[in-house]
Amino acid sequence: SCAAAASDYARSTAHFDGTAPSAHHRKRKRSKNAARPGEQVAAKVTRTDENGSWILASVQRFYSDTETYDVQDEDDTTKLIRLPWNHVMRLSTGAEGCFHKGARVMAIFPETTSFYRAVVSKQPVWKLASGSTTPMIQELILKFEDDEDDTGRTPHRRVPSRYVIPLPDAYFHEDDDDVDLTPPSTSTGA
Image (cartoon, rainbow, N blue to C red; front, side, top):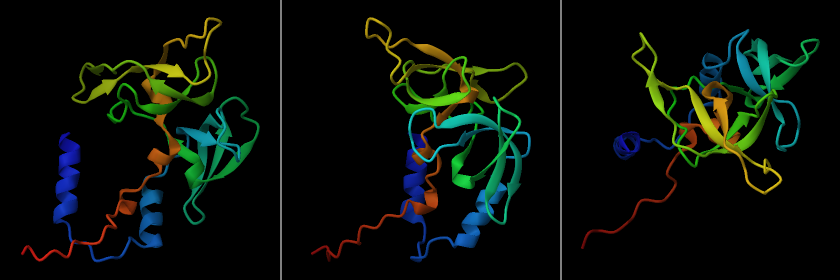
């Protein structure tokens, strides 16, 4: 793809001095990209990675010094939950382009506020909303894990693209970590 070719070009031509970005640089970048108060997010509220451990929540506050969030469960607005930055994911805008047929994702199961693992089962349809110049995916057709009916078939389910997010390890991957550690070849071209 064009993006892959561009990143390969950037990698092959970029000067790399052997030092990773500082912790301070990364922290500043995370603060800049932090979810804002009132924004709906996916929040991980259990210590395990079981299905349903991420829920729909709204951000009340982000503390840049400790990189923690106060979030409120959309189902239970009586209590605040304090979470580290890597337990909060911003929701999709529909314009990211990372969802294709076969992509492994997390999505809100219909009529719940919990995210479950799923696979995009049909190629998404891009549309231009009236007055917009940015193509968007309005909804995705998914098959959820462990969602077989009595006959053992997994149904296709429609989910608004806003409630479909990448798996956490893909979401929290930083391009800065993507350093090629293979030693340069020492052939002399003879």
